[in-house]
Amino acid sequence: MNDLYQTQNIEQLIDYQDDSVVSKTLIKKDTGTVTLFAFDKGQGLSEHTVPFDALVQILDGEADITISATPHRVKSGEIIIMPKNEPHALKAIEKFKMMLVMIRG
Image 1 (cartoon, one colour):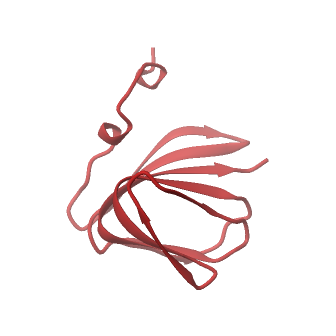
Image 2 (cartoon, rainbow, N blue to C red):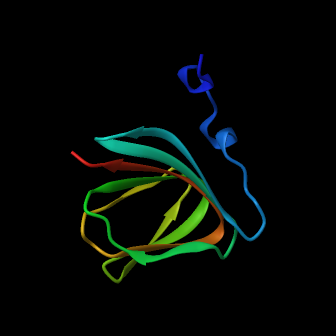
């Protein structure tokens, strides 16, 4: 049986790596995905767009998330929605972990 079908501590499912961005896909379906990310301090994702809405939940640490040129400081325990077709980028102010939920339907 898959370990993800049992109770898990979400922050322990992914580890930080020096000078890296680490990702782990938990669910991948035609209708959407759930992916965990761990960003080392200073790491990020450059500006891009996607054709569907995405929800980010910060699990640990702190990030700057820029959506359509507007910066947002998002901290552990907080969420933000990145609307479809809007340019967005992420940068680790300190190490941070996040869960990304993308809805395609």
